[in-house]
Length: 161
Image 1 (cartoon, rainbow, N blue to C red):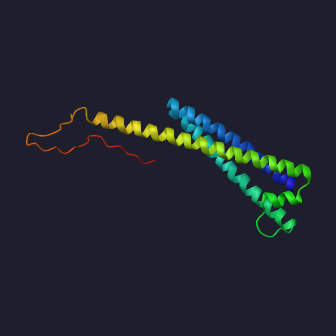
Image 2 (image 1 turned 30 degrees about the vertical axis):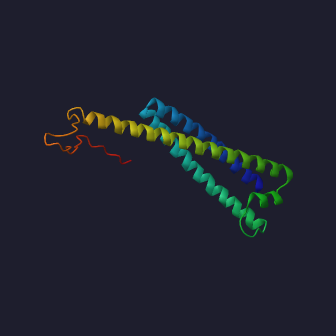
Image 3 (image 1 turned 90 degrees about the horizontal axis):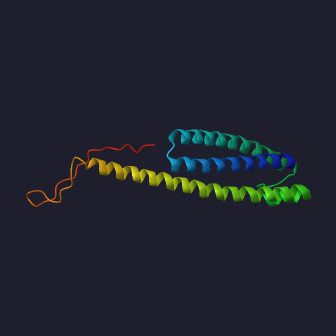
């Protein structure tokens, strides 16, 4: 059972590496403003997430079987798995744990970078739209009565995602 668990965790680690590569590709598409390629990358990410959910269900099932087989009370942790695993399995489990934690940190960093790029792009678009809306309506500081005029924008932006 532990070998099956190691195999599934290994597949998950490989999947996370693929997802990280897709995040890097997404960043490149955001920088180059390639919308069609960005949509393709997003679809590939969605597929990787579905695969990750499938592997997660398999891993949970194997852990439940190990828990029943080894009569483990409470949660099955890496420490508890190390107690019932042989030396080679324990080493592989610790390696996979480190790999997955490292990949998780790198994925979070890449996602944050991409989110920042998206926000900057949205801000740039909004600023451009504001400037374009003022082309035919120049800014007037005061009207002829000495009061400031009400500002009316001629552009509407739908920011729903």
